[in-house]
Length: 381
Image (tube, rainbow, N blue to C red; front, side, top):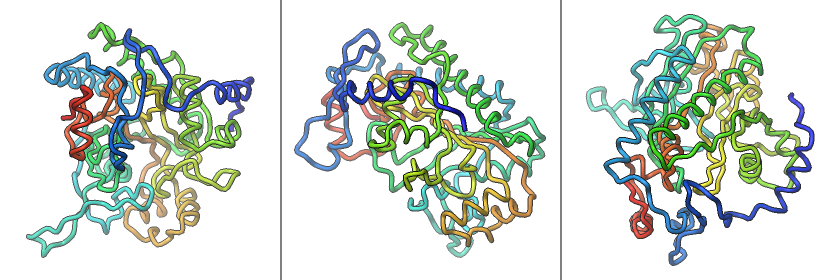
């Protein structure tokens, strides 16, 4: 486990004294922003909408579409080049009996439907392609050092929507074969640095294309484990810890997510059958437009036989060990891999400096949210 940078504890104490909870004025895009909760009558929906005061998108709806394409084209091309990835086709739905669907935190309900031609046999809309990608690497004949990426679209019916969450999820899912010897923290950090460098280069490219976009990402990303974060901020929630460290560092890689920490709590939930909880990470950046910590990517070295059995036991779901995908891991029939997901709408929102994810993707929002956002110049697609 890496040691904490000297002085970080003093920094943590200073931050706790100086950061105001979502009432911080910040300079972004040469304008003054005050982040405040949207006005309303106290309905539950309104609690999940924050709008920068006097917000006005620098781009029209038409030009926003151009900006979205510009971000996506540049980012995915460079990512594929740097990680040696080939774009492939991917499923929109899978057989639930295969064990290929992502269980996320274990409580989210997948969207399912019956197939008439197959006597209403049930299929599930994917929640992510975390498991399918590993299976595909073997099926398609990829070799160590080679990988794939694809456009993943999902519906998360139980998502609590807000400025950065939608029931529609679009991301680049990528996966790459590694050797058994490469299942190390150093490998994870090396890949994180590559992905982060692609993010930085995308921001630089966008700042050249659009005068209003300034570079705000730091040169280097800061690595920290969930346990180190808990030690720094023992009296705060995991999300508060992410905010404090992201605001202090600008960009952080938070590692080792899913297992229980010394406090007996988990930093966040992770399914037990794809990421190795000791070898995974989230890339989180500080986003001054909303004064929040914004997760752009989640990744990890995938479970081997030992990690899978251990994590299934900890999660209390050993029954999954008999499913085809999990059984293939236990029988060591699938390659060792590293992979992750990168939110397409998230990075478009970040690089175009938008206040709401609904400005860069089409989804369904409560009527009162749509009306309130519109009244403040936030046009949801």
